[in-house]
Length: 215
Image (tube, rainbow, N blue to C red):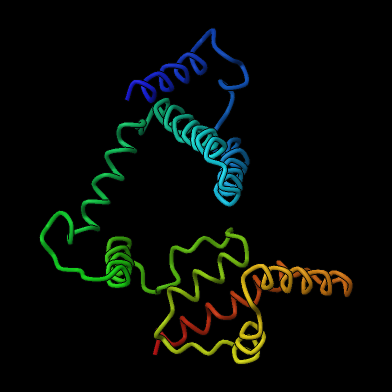
C-alpha cells in the first residue's frame, strides 16, 4: 500500500499550512462536481475498453476519496479519516456476505443480491425497496434500479407491452441506442425534456410500488 500512503502524504501536504491555497479552501460540497465528473470519466474509460485510461480515472476517483477523508479529519467535533472509511466498508462487506464469511448457503448470484438488499433494508430501517435509490441518478439509471428492486411486486408499468413489442424487433443494443436517441430528438423537436419526462414517469412508478407495499 505504499502508493496509497504516498497519496495520503501528498494530500496532507496540500491541505496543511504552506501547502496549496486552492486545495486548502475546498469543502465536501465544493468537491461534489469533481466527484461526479470523475465518476463519469471512469465510466467512459470502461465503455471504451481503455485500460490505461481506466487506471488513470480510478486514480482520480481515489483522489476524491482521500480528499474527502482528509477534510473529515479536520472536523473539530467528529473527526474521521481514510482508515475509518476503509474499515467501515470492510466490515460492511463481511456482514453482507455471510455465505463467504459465516457459512451461510447461497447457490446463485440472484439469491445473493436479494439477501443483500434485504439485509441493507434492515440495517438502515427502510420500509420500501425503493428507499436508498438516489433521486439524483440519471433518469434511465434511476428507472432501471427502480424496476430491478421491484421485480415480483407486480407493479404495473404503463405501455410495457408496447415497449416489449418495439424492443423485440431490434437486433442489438446499438439499435436500442439509436431508437432512444431518435425519441430524444423527437421530444426535443416538440419542446419536451426527455430526461425530465423519464424522471417524472419513474416517480409515478415509485408511488405505485409503495402503494403495493403499503397494502
